[in-house]
Image (cartoon, rainbow, N blue to C red; front, side, top):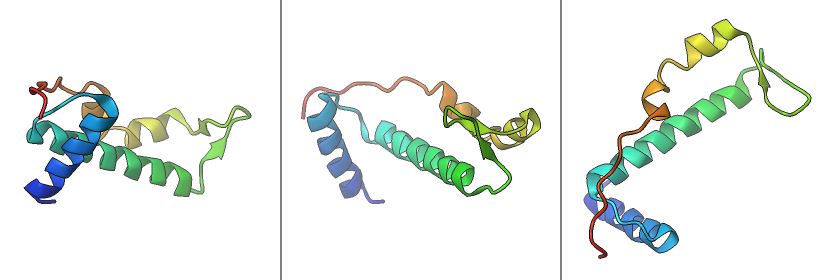
Length: 86
């Protein structure tokens, strides 16, 4: 995406949340959202996984260990600096 695209995302994000972040922070948020979405797709497309009665994914502990290594950085994201209102 271009800087212009990120600026549009920042504006829309500000209107929804009243929080204004810098471009680097927005890039990180978009990247994290894409990674989480890809993982969600993997969970829904993996035919070896089942569902528990409450709707959560039923997988072995080994599967979770092998498939969540990439997501460890997303569990505790670094705080973003808030900017002055645009």
